[in-house]
Amino acid sequence: MEALALLLFERMGILLIVTFILTRIPIVRQLLDRKMSVMNTVYFICLFGLFGILGTYAGVVIEGGVISSSFWIFPLQADQALAHSALVGVVIGGLMGGPIVGIGAGLITGSHLYVMSGFTGLAGGIAAPLTGLLAGGVARFFLQERVISPAKAIFIGMFAPIVQMGIILIVSAPSEKAIELVDLIGIPMVLTNSISIAIFTTMLRVVFREEERAVAYETQRALHIAEAALPHLKQGLTYQSADAIARLLLRELKTAAVAVTDTENILAHAGLGDRILIPGEPIRSELSRQAIGTGKLRIALNHEDIQPNHRLLRAAIIVPIKQAGQVAGLIKLYFKKPQEIRSVEIVLAEGLGKLLSYQLSVAMHESMEALMKESELRILQSQINPHFLFNTLNSIVSLIRIEPDMARHITMQLSTYMRLNIKLIASHTISIQQEIMHLNSYLEIIQIRFKDQITMEVQLDSDLLIAMIPPVTLQPLVENCIKHGLKDRNHGGRIRIEVLNHEDTLQISIEDNGSGIPPELIEQLGKGPANSSEGNGIGVYNVNQRLIGLFGEESRLFIENNVNGGCRFSFNIPGTSTERRGYVGENH
Image 1: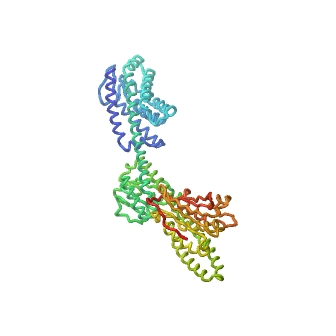
Image 2: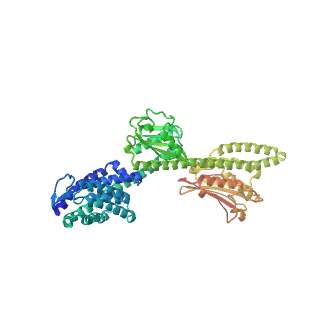
Image 3: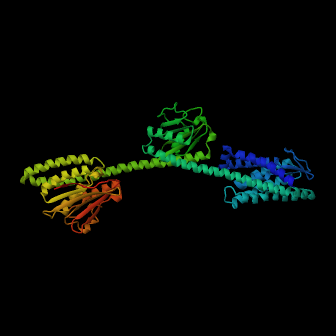
């Protein structure tokens, strides 16, 4: 019994070594990693049926209680029996593929055992498909693992030879010889089959874990590639951006070549075949046209479906990339052999296509959002000029008859102010120094109307003169202070502008010592045009909307009344640093 067990372990060990070598071959790994379908079920039946036949030839012939150490087994005589490992392949097939695969592999293995004949030929022919059915049923209804653990495999593997021993006792005659045979081969076959099944499942678990790690690595690599491609995708699918993306993918994916197209032409090609393809060449591949039409991935496995026609490019994965739900182009990954396209490469290509499509759509959305925001800001900026212009023209009209010289002076100052205003408003942001100059030109006009009733004081760090703010931001707020807060003061009116830096944030405030803002208007002012007999607040509203549009909600206007009278406007602009602080000057 011990000698038989050792001999079976030796034979099965050789078969397991061969199996391990097979699991290192990419095409076998692809087969094991595929999802079950009709064709894959046939593949699995043939594969594990063949493994069952090999397990038969790895068996040991028993004749009259004597063990034969012959390595090759020929058809048996009526008085010969076989101790084998044929059920290992049948059990593994059932556990991996379910009852259908188990029965199919069992029929192949059982038919071979029956043809081998001998004392146990009929028992083997019955036991193999029955074992496959039981193993498949256990896998389908009781186990949730893709491949069972070795401990469970040992437990399940014990039942296969036990079932066969029971069938030998039932169908083989004479019964005395059957009992004697079972006593001899029973324990060795239980041990070798169960341990072999455990080792086999361990190999499969290693294969699948390696594939899972490979998929995780490829997923991480796809994210890295998508991140690196984002700056190029923001430019859209141009010849320059396509060339940069193609070279990036070629470097990262290590494929034979990479091409990037739009829906009509090939924009860029990197790798093998780059010298025989001119950017701008029309797409002629039928599979590429199908990918564009359907928006689904296509795989080219023959030379005729490859463009460019290069002798070393024999396979390709064609991945559509979409923009706003519509196919915008293709990423074509070329390989030297069809065997190089594994399930990992397909999953990577699909994931990469989705990531690039998402980023291309995001880039388009950001571009459109920026254009819409710019358009909105232009509209808001344009509303400020008429607001100030109408007030000044009204003053000129009233002075033409009374003080024509003063009216002429105001007209000249208005012309200077408007020229400067047009220059500044063409930019998204300007320096505080430019804004103060613009404000001073505004005050030149205002001071003619209010004489010496108002004094303006500006306090800011000299290093902050180059800090950037939206153009025409201070003037509408100062105008609001003059028109509403200081309208009832005949003298002593004061407006103070303070610009400070705090933790890399520019803090700007404008306050006056006037009558303040009615409490019922404070909440409404800046959020929309105000319904008030004193004005509609469009200037303050425009300033607030531009601040929010450029710098976010945290930069909105904060409006409050001072305890000692007057009101205060303040807002923050992030991203400014300074070291020194002091006074710039004072205007009257």
